[in-house]
Image (cartoon, rainbow, N blue to C red; front, side, top):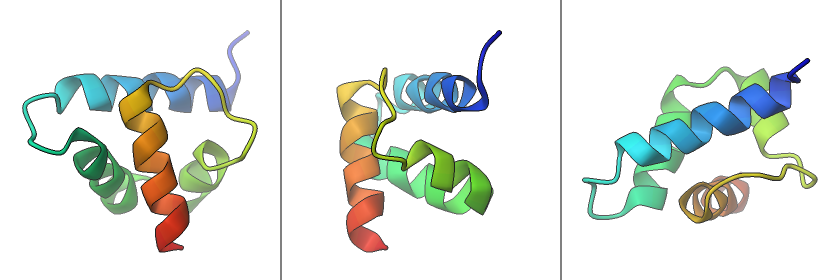
Length: 68
């Protein structure tokens, strides 16, 4: 059984893969999550124990943490 957090990690990694054409991938991923993800989804993905994210997603999550 896959957890909600696992699904969010998979989704975030897919977003990063689809935004590789952007000049600043982490910034684009952070913006996408900020604009389109429900606050509950953002809260789960920003938890300190989340693992399995790509380096671009990890950087995007750091940007989101710094902005809040």
